[in-house]
Image (cartoon, rainbow, N blue to C red; front, side, top):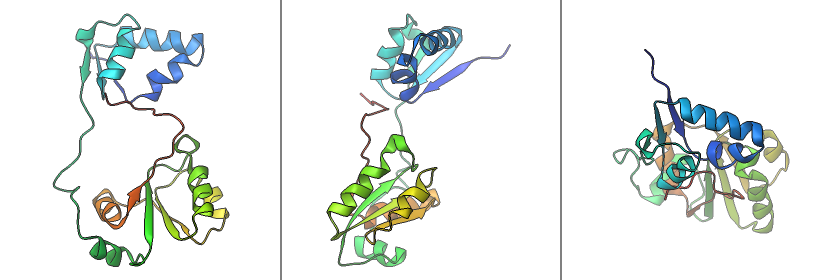
Length: 171
């Protein structure tokens, strides 16, 4: 007597289900078969209800943060620890380096603003392409342990996520 629990973070319902009638049908079938559906926000809950799914099957559990781990630290200390320049503005991306996250736009912006250092923390199938641009102010550091991410974030002046669409709507 196993239970089927589906978790949706956004693009599965927001994009794939609307790709064509086959995806839409498979999505609706899967959602109807599920015993429980977990979503990250009310927007997705409403999208799933539009498939004729009972709201009683849908549970909203917002994305969370480990506040013991993710807390600001001194910017200068963070930069020293990561061997980053103290005298440059740093723009940080943290995520998977894939087309959906639009890393080419980061490279394009880096090319237009050479006096900023753009740091990409993560990996993905587009990493080598982004590195091949050879921009002196664009640094790809690869995947880092989660416990190190707050240090990278504290070292940055701003964070960037240049997607064309928002795949996960939290409200």
